[in-house]
Length: 90
Length: 464
Image (cartoon, rainbow over all chains, first blue to last red; front, side, top):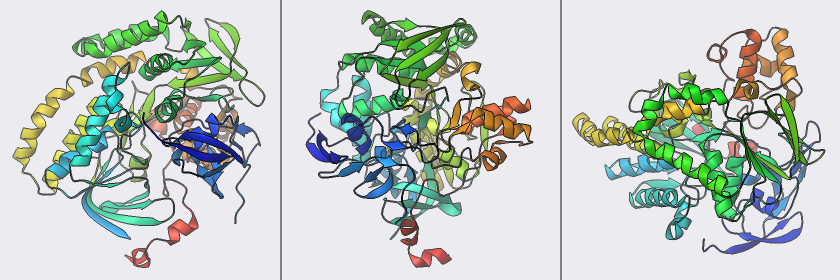
């Protein structure tokens, strides 16, 4: 595709991904087996639709909780973190 | 900051790009807003990046997408990528956010080109990590060249399933097997619509060719699957499937589900546009005239969000809607509109006659549309089919009341994922048709919005 690579941090680990990727695809590509736990049941969940519909991919991105990781394109140095349960209100 | 334009197009897929380019070329001040960073929508996602190297099973699609994007970029239409709509108001006022700041666009005419989404079909284990949709896997392929590896199963029905399987194999992926849930009787029912299919033989040939590629690769295909389950504690480890009354189980590392696509009606429903229930596609779609005008003044729809027609017909519908907008805005006369529409309507005939055949062939089976009691229907709030049926037994008359009783549909996805399933379940439990039962009311904000974003709207806007 002739695209550049960027380095992002998935749960603190540096990963090199293509510039067209979303935070969700970067997290899955880095081998994160789940990306959040349900605030209702605590079950593990992972991105399901990858196009902004299902809201299963909520993660903390650059310190901001409950971002739809599939709708956020990676940027160099982006911090992508698993979100456990409900977001904490600042 | 507020923006004004004559024609606002929402969604940069085939319909939106074609509409914006057509109107801008006719001299209409046009703005295209889209939630992605680049034009293309889902079907033509990243098409601009692929056009130089467009060969293989999807080569022609990439080229079509890239050509549309190039036409749009050269048209002079304004473009607001990376923005999401959270409220549609009367008189063409549209509230958007870029994720940090909200703003309002004042348009004289709005076209919703919000596309399609995969039909969510709740089944046991569909919330386990390792289970995602075929569309999701295809998006991963488009943005990162990711392909499935050992232990990946594909299950469901519909053209996208076969297209994706062929794409994945071509790109070096591995598929353990395909579980085809198309009910055997569908082939018989679809025959009634075969005349239309024969007029658009290219769709049928394409489908057969894709299946041939998959067979040639030696991928096992199991037909007449009537139920599917994902098994595992924290992640999928096995897939179970039912064929003619007999359950089978196979180890699985991943399960990709696809049960056809349905119109993304969230935006159109939020303005209370009249909708109809499509019995063949088993979904709701806005009621429109031949130009895509909805029942709501100043709002039109085009492409798959108005009823599934596919990418090429969507682009044509976008152009027709743009001609009508240009006429209403005074850029062209009625005669000019009709003259320019004539060849477009003719080219629609290369795509639309096959639809009833395809729709009937891929109508999902009853067993899949009516999940068992223990199946989680609402992923956000973890509500089961039993809880919904219990609510109906307590007297809930429709989805919106069920939502109040159970929280089903009250989570962040706002019922996008469970809406159709809830309608099917409630309809069956009450002995009514889905059309009578209807779906959840859709209210703004159409997506979650922080108080900070909301407060960033200019103050004078709050007192219009």
